Image (cartoon, rainbow, N blue to C red; front, side, top):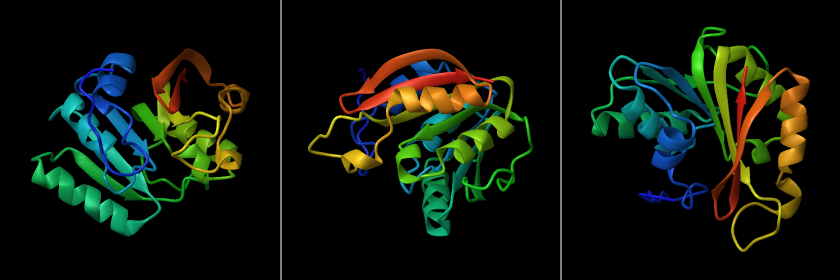
Length: 187
């Protein structure tokens, strides 16, 4: 991986620049949403830089204080193309983003935190436009010294099966970091 950007929390071993720019190929002027963005919002901030002033990035989380933190960080970096959205991703239709409007949706270290995987994937599908891409990055299933308990982790095969059951097409599978796998789906 190049240019390792370390952030406290579950994303310290991930490189958002590499994942968003090189792997996902996020483009200038696009609309994206980080679904379950977390308080550091590093994928939100990097997405905002990549989509530029003609693009828009939604920072979505169920915790209002997380959204406040991300909004503050975006303003500190002079990023005014970030919009926060308070939502429960486990409820299909709850996220206040126009349906079929996103070019990219991100689920980075999000799926292991819920038991309602199908609902979260359906919400991502609902928000993406035809041809839009979903980036899923989550913890590898082998038990390791860091990360969530082994029983909380999802096998990549399970994520693929759930996503394909709602008409997502798998377009890429890759190693996202030492402790993470990555999947890119297209609507």
